[in-house]
Length: 112
Figure 1 (cartoon, rainbow, N blue to C red):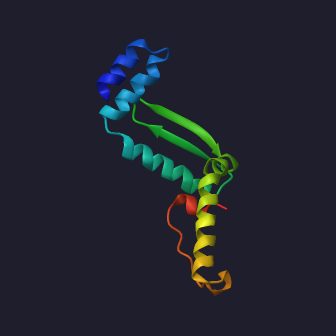
Figure 2 (figure 1 turned 60 degrees about the vertical axis):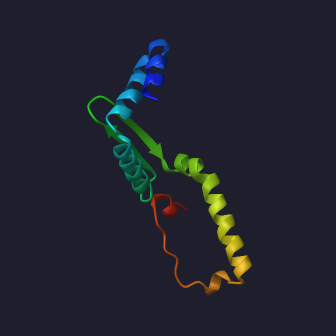
């Protein structure tokens, strides 16, 4: 994969972006990026806007994220989850009023 990216880098119209991706992969920064994404998702659970930030000294990313925009990004997944829950309730014969407790896990589960 890195060899392919290096070839693309040499011919790219935006070599700095490909270079940043190569750096990202070589330095194994995926988990750090994941944590930055989780933080902004968590922040959006309590605010209308949050700042996404990721920096390792070579790659610096910062962007304001609106909760409404984030909700648009995940709307399809939320609709699928709602449909799955509705289907489960229907097939099991359980009424929503009969549910005492729901456990939410993950940042997106607290949206809406």
